[in-house]
Every structure is written in C-alpha cells, then in structure tokens.
Image (cartoon, rainbow, N blue to C red; front, side, top):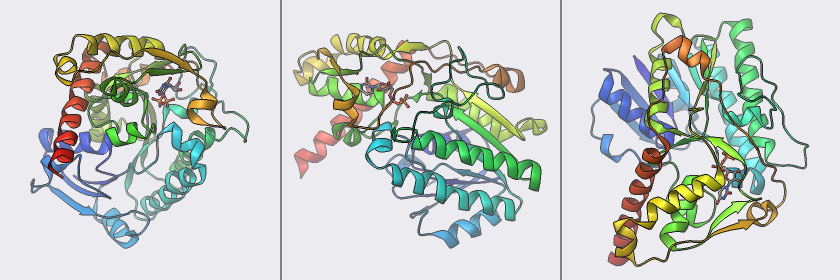
Length: 349
Ligand code: UDP
C-alpha cells in the first residue's frame, strides 16, 4: 500500500510513520514544513519525504493523491490558544486547504482517512460521546474558540456526503486528548500556546506556577499515543473493509481526569525526579487563572469530554492499555530530553 501523509512531521504523523515502517511493508509519501520529529526515519527507503508547504506545493499533492492508495491530510492547527488569537488562519488551513485535498480524493477515487476531532462534540451534554447519536454543541459566534470545532464538523459532513452521493471511500477518526512524546514543542509551551500536558511540563521545568484555567474542574479523557496508534493502524489496515464509511472515537474513557488532577499528578512525578535536583528548580505552585487572562477573549471551555469507544471495540477489538501515571511519566521524560537538547544548543551558540 502507498500512503500519503500531509503534515507528516506533526504529532500524529510522526508517530504514524514510526508504526508503519515498523509494522508493515507499506510505502509512505510525506510532506511537511520541517523534519524535527521524523529525523530517525528520513533514511528509510520506504519513506519518501519532501519538505514543503501544502498551501503552495499543490501540484506535488495532486500528483501524489493520484499515485497513492490512501490519503491522510493531517495538516491543521489544533491548539486552543490559536483558535482565539487567529481564527481565520484556523479556518483557512484546517478547512479550506483540506477541502481541496478531499476533493482530489473524490476526483481520483482514493481512500481518505481524515482526522476529525473530539472538539466537534463541544459542550455535548451526553455522559459519553457517541459518533452516531450525540449532538454536536458549540457556542455563539463571538466565541472564537468554536472555529476549529465547526471547521472540522463541516468537513466531516462534506466527506460524509461525498461518501454517499459520489462514492468517496472514507474513514473519520476523532482523537480525544492524545498525549505522549512530540505532542507540542517546548517552544510553543514557552509562548503559552501548547496543549495542557506540554504546558504543565514546561511550567514545572521553569519552576513557574501551573495555571488552572477557571478552577481546573473541567475534565478530559487522556490516552497514550501508543494506544491511540493501535486504533489508527487498525483503521488504516481496514481488514474486511470494516473502517469504510465509519466514524470512530479514539480515546480512553478509563483515564478521565480533571485539569487539577493532571496538574497534581505531574507535580508529584516531578517532585522526586532526579532532573529536578540536577536543575535546581523549585517545585511549582498550582494557581488559579481566569480564562480571560489565560486565553484572552473568545474562549469558552468544554467541561466534560468522554468518548464512547464501543464502536472501536466492536469493530477492531480496540483496548487501550497504558495507565495515566505511565503516560504522564513518558511525556515528562521525553520533554526533559528535549529540554536538555535545547539547553545544549543554546550553550553552543
Ligand atoms: N488548561 C489549563 N492550564 C494550562 C493549559 C490548559 O487549565 O496551562 C486547560 C484548558 O483550559 C482546557 C484543558 O486544560 O480546559 C485542556 O486544554 P488543551 O489545551 O489540552 O486542549 P483541549 O482539551 O481543550 O482541546
């Protein structure tokens, strides 16, 4: 199988490349702006990488959609901070640029595996979100946070309609707070624009307070990226065509924690960590901050977000295994290595 991955140097793309090269004999064609998350794989003869911007390299993309069997358009902005600071950029990249790729898949009759998002459920009141029955609930237009959710939702609907009206072969998958190495760069965390786990790790390394937005009672279900990859690989393998036309939540309802609990668990891991004494960093406080202060205007939060993974279980026997402490410890250690490398570069320059 020939797999086209746009945004191959991202969190999902980089892990997926590792899995595909390790577990299959497939060929990967990939494009991204940079290579820092995939350097280990660049020498592999089954990985054909081109550095480029999907908004510019349109002919390369069309040629490769034609050439490949399955297309994963993973290029998107997926950090809440950017939804409120630059909503138009989110729409242009996440929606407009991806719509073009979707249409090419229709034109050339290629299978598309599209990253939808747990954000589409928004403030859904259901206890566990179901792909076929849960309502998708977003806030009013002045709340810019919902631009990401609604951009993705409309693409989901467009792909779905291309499926039954024009025979597009597709699968939509919805990540629920995947975490692990390479989630965001520490530089993003430095600017305060990364996702929760990376942000807290950065704060801990700096000895800065961990900030709980609006009290930190809001809950998320986290999943280790290796567990999530088991799910995504099953979808890509598509044995018996079981993934065709499907929408699948990929998450771990067993790791349901409040933001405050995540802060406390990470702080606990860091408290006795050998690197803390090595760096001589004081243990961070946990403090409250308003969403207005933290994100600026246009932010509205999701208070509960739990996936039903029944469909993944029934279809693929999906069963996440990694526990919360282990997943957090892996992320912490990865970011510490990245931090050490960052420090070294700064010392040398
Ligand atoms: N959050 C927080 N402190 C931080 C970063 C994030 O309290 O330093 C909160 C954020 O408001 C949200 C949750 O943590 O309620 C998860 O945020 P993330 O950026 O991971 O994205 P989301 O799950 O909302 O898509």
